[in-house]
Image 1 (cartoon, helix red, strand yellow):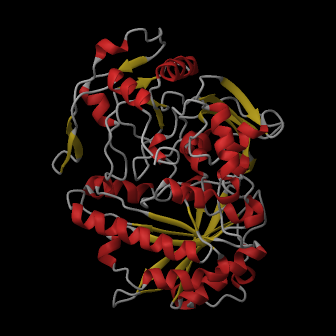
Image 2 (cartoon, one colour; image 1 turned 45 degrees about the horizontal axis):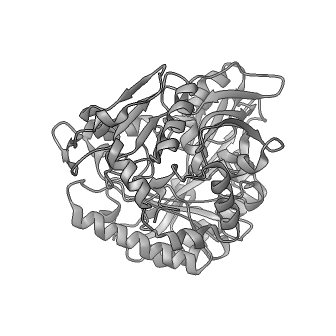
Image 3 (cartoon, helix red, strand yellow; image 1 turned 90 degrees about the vertical axis):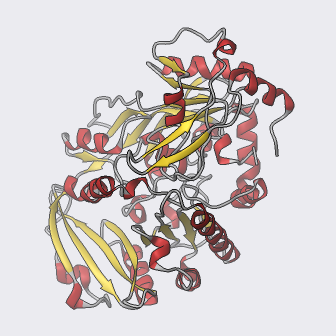
Length: 493
C-alpha cells in the first residue's frame, strides 16, 4: 500500500530531491552516502526547540543505516531533542504537515525498522535520564534513551535490578519495550514489556500522555510491543526486584538436539534456574544437531548458595563437557561486552546482519528447528550464532507481543553476519529467512519482529491475527494521520 498523494507531496516538500547512494567503507568501517540535500527552505515554521534539528548530510546519513546494514533510507531531518517538549513540538509539526516520523534509539534494528525516507528521525538517546530509585515501590522511572547497562548500574546501587535483560545491554529502554525484550529470565518473569509499571508517550497526534494498566490501558497495551504504530515512548517506569550479589553460570553440552530441547522445557517448567538460554551448535561436519544449555542460579542475598547436584539432577547433558563459573551479578549481565569489543576491533561488528528471529510452539520446536537447520551451514551463520531457548506463555501478558499458543514457546534466532558488500549473499539469506518463517508459521510459529524477514501488509494481518482490529483501532485513535511506524511496513506495505 503506497502513501496517499497528499502525504507524498508533503514529504517531497520537507525532504530531499534525488536518491541517496550508500556504500560501506571497509577501511573506516562506516557507511558513506552521497545523501541528497534537504530542502531547508520548506522547513519554515518549525517550532522553537530546546535541542537541535539537523539537516546536514552527515547527520542524515548516519541515521540512514542501522545494525543490519541492509536497508538504507535517508530522512529529511534529524531531531536531537533537548527535552520531551521538543518531541511533542516536532511530532505536532509533522502531523500537521503529513510528514512521517521514526524514533531511533541505539540503531540496533536489522531491517530499517527505525528509518524513514524523506521524513523526520527522532533520536531518543538524549532522553537518557534515570530517576531516583523508589525502594518503597521497587520501581525506577527512566528516559526512553537510557541504556539497560546504565539502568542496571543505577538500580544495583540500591540492591535492586530489572527482572529481565536482553543479552546485549547497550540497547535503549524505549527500543526494546517497542518490540518486547526477551532474555534468559523470561521463563520466570516474562519479557521486558511485562515488567513495565507505566509509560510516558508522545502519540502520533502529538499528545504527551501517561498510561498504565488502569489509566489509558488501551494506549498502554498498544505501545508495549506495538512496534511504534501509535506513539513514541519517551519514558518508562520499570518494575524492580531484589538483585543477587553473585551468580553461578552453567554451560551444559548436548549432542542431540531433541534431548537438548526436552531438557530445556523441563527446566523452564520447574524453574530451578533463574536464567535459561542456550545455543544450537554444529558438529565437526558442519551439521547443526547439538546444543549447549546456558543456565544461571542466583546466589545470595536472593537465595541460598547454588547446589550443583540438585540443579543438574535428571539432566541428560554430557557431564564431561560441563563448565561451571561463579561471577558477580553485573559481570554476568555484561558478559558479552568483551566479545562485542573484539567484533568491533576486527570490523565484524559492521557486517550485515540478516537475522532470523522466530517464536516456535514448544511441542513442535525440535521438528521445526531440525527442518530449518538442515540447510544451514556455518558459512551462512558467519561470526554469528544460533539461539534456542524456552519462555513461559503464562508470563507474557502484552497483547501485541504475538507468541504461539503453547505453554512453553521457544525463541529461535539465527543471528547471521555476512560481508556488507556481498548483496547476492544477503538476498539469498533473506530469502532463506522467509522460507524458515513460512515453515514456522505453518506449524503455529510467529515472527519476533526484530530480525530481517521480508513481510507484506497481509503478513502483518496474519501475524497479529485476532488482535489486528485492536491495533488498527488504537492507531486510528492515537495516530489518525498515520505518521508513525512506517519503517515496519505494517500499515505502509
